[in-house]
Length: 427
Image 1 (tube, rainbow, N blue to C red):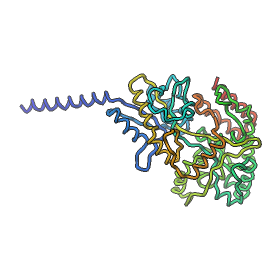
Image 2: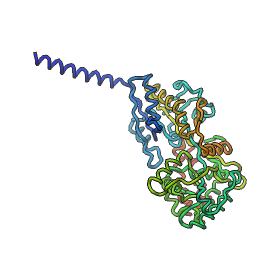
Image 3: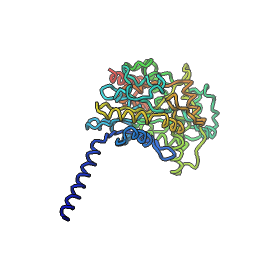
Image 4: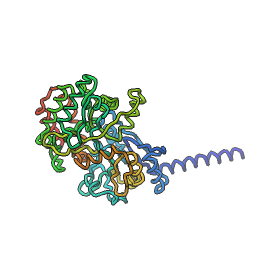
């Protein structure tokens, strides 16, 4: 009898394990590859909130998250996963990298899957459509400006003009004053060319000189040479010659640039307002400063003949991989929730700029207002972020910029190589 009971128990345990395994096998699994998962003050994250909402529709769903390797700013993680035959169902990444996968051969057309597309302005979704197919959903984003260290400017005796009078000539006056007081210690602006990461902080200088990467959204060919790109490289070499930027800037990374800026050693450079508080905290925690310095955001300065200077607008996108299975609809629903009104409202409180009509930006940060004014006055600098070729074009620049800064290339040589390289990718 005891042996019979024992066999029954073993049988029941085995059956239970088999039943659990069968349920788990049938449970839909959605994988999401993210460059970051914003944590809100209450400890919730974008993904935890959206997953909880998704489970109301699909109680058994399993959501698995992986983080991107952003060590060199490239698409290495996605490319490796695709090569291995294990692409994620959802990619959540900067448009700088994610646009590469916004192609009909890879991405799911979200048009019939996301139920609240009417909450987005048509102009917001237009850059993410290809032949009428919505191949990506844009997240709220941020625009950059030129952050100006008011403490350093007062220290060197430079009176900052109004934004309308912030020109290249004024910038160079400021640069000379910084150099005169702090030669070899503090710098007029930041420069970096170690790799692609953070290149947008530098590339906005092209807009200062009226240079256009492309004309009127035509991504079939580059116009960076014909619109005067050599003038930007001339300017960069002038900064090197006059020691207005740190020596060996061709080897500097974005981390080097950020540390120098936050320590108070850079007068004015491209940056994002949403980054200021966390990076101030970093340098204070590390003992470089005891408190933040006062700062404002201006547009990049304008060269003669250039009116308002446009700025980089940076946001992330969600791309759903089309598998032809039931998981496609589940993944799209997760994207709908993670970019929905509740989470965008929370992100707005973190200084992101919502892109839905049903979200009110409640931030009262005056610096965020300055960024909004920069966008309103100058618009967005079109560098082709939604072009699927962007991820291939982006790495072309930093090796060229390195040789510009070291003087190995003349400005004309450099811009010709850059222009030819872009057009070769676009062919």
